Image 1 (spheres, rainbow, N blue to C red):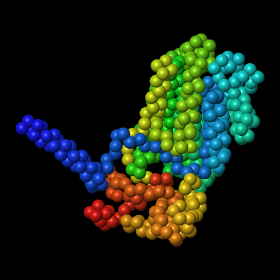
Image 2: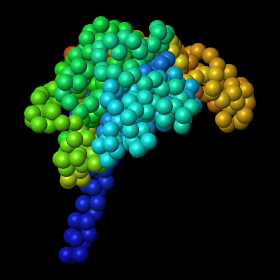
Image 3: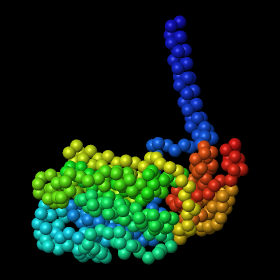
Image 4: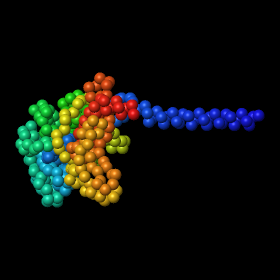
Length: 410
């Protein structure tokens, strides 16, 4: 009888395991659509820059970190030109190249005696065929107005890169950008401040574009506003040791108090932020810290903040999915593609279908991108509503309540 009872025990365990597996599958398929989706603490929100006509980058400081960032900016501008983006570069620094700069900064002996901003601008203008404007003067708030491009229908984006080695210069930048953001409230001209600073063997890179104390999140999955660097890290504007305040990074390096590699590392981090912000458009960090002594690098993702209702987007086509660039033939049979409009769950969308076979796709009426469905709590009252949104641009539309109920009970 013992083998028989062992058989029954194994059979019971097997049936129980299969039952639990079936219940888990039913739970995953049926229950989530019926429940509201709270903000996940592990979800990362990417920074949204919109679709600006022009991008202006001001590199403030062309010394230890800035001289290496200049090379990255030249390569970025070369990419932007091939992608049809109007990207304008300005190198700002009042200092002159000295012999002591050759140990750690991105200069050579033939450039000694020339202004840093002029030397870097001339070098990369000749190397890449770009138009880079050198500004041989100290940073001031007036520079933000002087190099602001003319009005453009889709807006402009200004990125101020701080690569300075003293608190006084960083304070001027914080005051100027703060005043600019107050003036530009509600405007299509966006300002980002990307700041890089370092000590002997460590440093940090912070980015921000908002005066709010916490990130402003869109219910559709991106970050509308990120606190400025000095709001994220108030110690950036605090006075350092008196001796360090008097000496530049080059002097500290000669005294053996600063690593020759820390500035290259900071410039690389700045490059990562720029490429992810402008090229891949998936930047989801608010700041990064690096320590060359321990070899550790830590980045802070944007995972929380205050939900705000975004403004309705303008009718701006997305280049990567513009209707005129779509395939003109059916991917299944090669037949003629016909474009039109149709109603989907009570929302008017764009459709493309084949005249010769059953192939059909529903796309965004603004940019032709892929559509998705989500449940969003716009008012934060615990009553989420279903929305239809584009996965490539900012278009979205509320699904009528009767359509949502019908779909949920089907």
